[in-house]
Image (cartoon, rainbow, N blue to C red; front, side, top):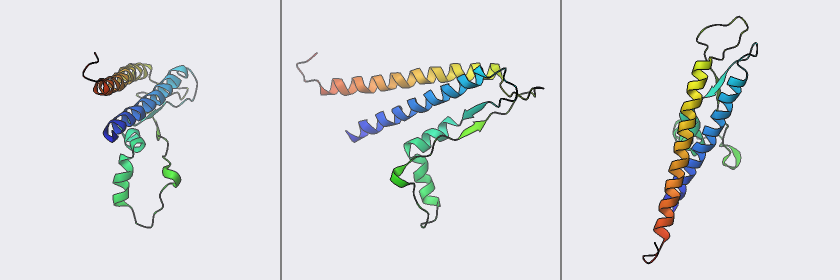
Length: 135
């Protein structure tokens, strides 16, 4: 049961992070004409490691024993990064619409794939709980 819970928790964390990344990309697209706007994004793999506690295990092995852990197992939010502009604009806006559209489409596909993984895991769990006489 713990293995199933861990798998579902991992997928739930991935879904939350995909949703947050979609919000960031949508914000970048909405501000494509805003002078001085700097596009933001996140390192999804790093954020997922941090959200699932895998980064904490790596950091715990390399830190000093006197260092304090976050209270109550709190997790830091995903670190937002500034995107590097492909070319400079006179108005200081760093949004590259081609890159943002591609990132939006890619993230959408991965979000839907995560939903399918969760759906498949739940369906497998329900099938396993059915008795031999149930169809």
